[in-house]
Each structure stands twice: as C-alpha cells, then as structure tokens.
Length: 294
Image 1 (tube, rainbow, N blue to C red):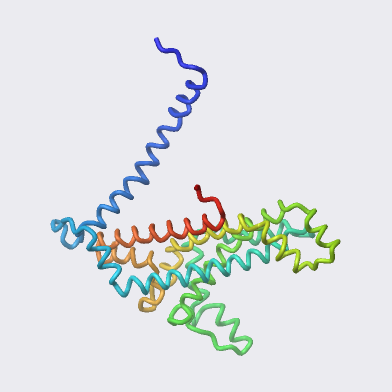
Image 2 (image 1 turned 90 degrees about the vertical axis):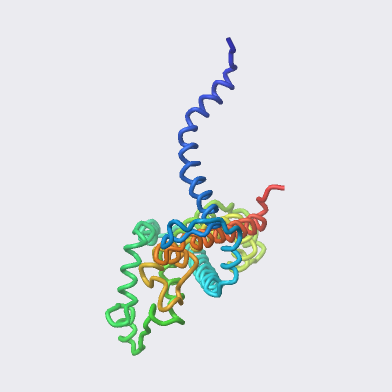
C-alpha cells in the first residue's frame, strides 16, 4: 500500500476540490472557442443548413479584403481611443482631487460611482431619451442658453462622440477608483522632499506621482481598452449601428453577420480576428509595463 506524504495529500486534496470548477471552466470557455475557430474555417450559412464544407482561410482572406470590415475596425479604434482617453483624464483628475481628506469626500465617492451600479441596457435607454433631438433634455438645456442642439445619434459626425460620452459617464468612476487607490498608497516622503526643494504642485504631480503610478495606470488602461473594445449593449440599444453604418463597430458587425444575415462562418471569423487584435494590444501593454515573461 502506497503511503503519501502530507504535502502530497494536501496537493491531491486541492486538485480534487478545484477539479469540478476547472472542468466546467474549460468546457464553457474552451469548447466555444474551438467551435468558433472551426466555424471560421468552414462555409456555414444558416440559410443553407446542409451546405456545410471546409474552406480553409478563405473567410479570413475575404474579410481582410472587405471594405466594411476596415471601416468597422477604424470606428472601433475611434471609439476605444476616444472613450478610454476621456475616462483616463477625467478619472485621473477626480482621483487627484479626492486623494486629500475633506468634508463630504465619502459621500461624493458614493454618488460618483453610482453609474457603475446600473445595468448598461437601462443606462443606454436613458441616454437614448436624453440625446433625442426633439424630446431630449440635453437639447432643451442648450436651447435655454440660445444654442441650437444636434441630432446627436442621428448625425454621422456626432454619433461616435455621443457614444463616447455615454461610455465615459458609465466607466470614468472605474478609472477613478483604481487611480485613487494608487494615490492613497503613495509614500508621502518624496512629495515632502520635493516641497522642501521648492517644487510646485504641478511638478510633484508630473515628475513624482505619475511615474510612481505608471504600473497601475497601465493596468487600468488595459482593463478599459479590453472592455471598450468589446462594448456592445450601449451602442446596440442607442444606435443599432446607425445612422446607416456610421456607428457599426466590430462587435455590432459580428452580431449583424451572425444573427441578422445568418452568416455564421463570417461572424466567427470576425470574432477570431477581434480576439487576435486584443491579444496584440494586451501583449504591447504588458511589454510597456515590463511584466512580460522573458
């Protein structure tokens, strides 16, 4: 009879406890991924359910030559860069203001993070009403000061900036919480030394605080870039990809190809390419942060 050491028994016990969760995780994440990759290599159209055959990389070549794909890709970059940049700048500013103790700080924090507690669909419906050119409160307030409002989500030039505004309203508190946690953990000694040397608050912020917060900033940007790249619900509810196709991001295009036009293989190809793009972005940011394994 084989006798196991206490450390081996502990290892087996931990494996037996984790095994069910790991199996479920593998099934619900790995199987859909493999099925998606398989579908991207096939001709699979639900309007022709029995016409299912292998086409290799043809779907990828067709997609890379698709003008609509590149337009959706550029719109996605526009949305992601605009939303994440705005959220970072606003979050950084609010976090810097909240790092010092003052009366009512905790109440302001709670109020400020309330948008994160609402469901994205409900937020999207509220903003859709607010952005309405005839009934929306935004154009009404502008009219009170003599400014003629826009058709915010019905105009090709203003639809993406409007969606960026909505996304920033929802997710700036997330950026603020991460950066505020960073500010509160910074040691006071470097700032006190800089003040003794005659450094201004501006110099202390840019030459001491920001370099010390760089790893945390990169992590926060990574989280938000990934999430903004995957944004679907807010865009779909407010615009549905319109007007025309001027707010059709890669996520919206994938949905329309798969569930409206029933081109499953084409939608799968889009999903795989989006995953590749996100992997490239994550790798680049990891290299900036210096955490990539050598």
